[in-house]
Length: 209
Image (cartoon, rainbow, N blue to C red; front, side, top):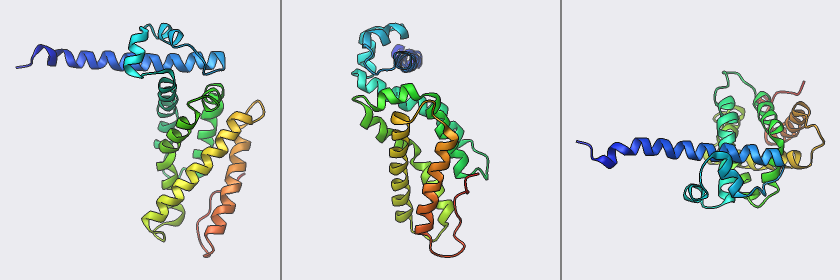
């Protein structure tokens, strides 16, 4: 037989999830609207229709809230596009989808990447996209590399790609052009892959069209 607290737990969990989701979405909207990460917590709480106490309970401080809002946005809108890619989807197509996501939300990501939670957001995004890079490395080199080399190359590509994306988001000319950016990135990766793959017949990244 359930105790009263056990019976209330699912409803409490739902309220917690709703509050967290409302706060993260409010953070995205207000940062995008104002073009800065310096949005008062009280404004975010008001927009989410919760108290400041709830913000502190769930996130602790503004940087933690903004970090989670940034990662949540990528999880909700970007990762499904990459995870649901049909078989045969090229690295270029997935890179283009990623570029379009960051271009669509440039104001928000630029505000965070140039703010006090920028480093943490960069590390978090690398972690989210690492499995995609690992998959590309495995497709390019097959079974010729041991697992540790695959992991090291995937980490290297994720870090380099993050730096490339961050520079583009922060300093790129308006408006951002995902297609042109993707072509630049794929050309650079093709050079790296060629240097790492002296053996004839090594599969290459798709040549930009």
